[in-house]
Image (tube, rainbow, N blue to C red):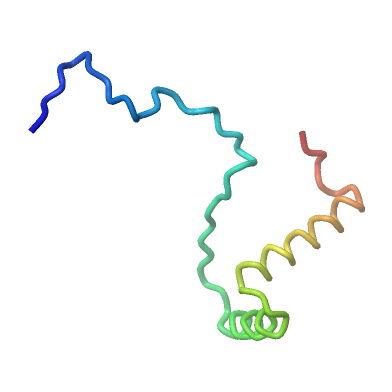
Amino acid sequence: MILLGASATVPFMPKTRAPIELNDEPGTWIFRDIPRDVMRRAKAAAAIQGKSVRQLTIDLMEEHLQELDKKGILPKGK
């Protein structure tokens, strides 16, 4: 067993991390109470397109957000 003093550092551990941009790291959403029919149809649509339900959802959201951007409905990003 090796004991390290209070001032000892482990050489392979980084002391600081580079700052993480909020836009660089994906987030997590959990949706509840999705109607079963919508879930079934989304799963079928994803399968037909060779996508996961996750990717289908992202693609659909991106398309919708682009439409809202074109209409000037969404606020401008930074």
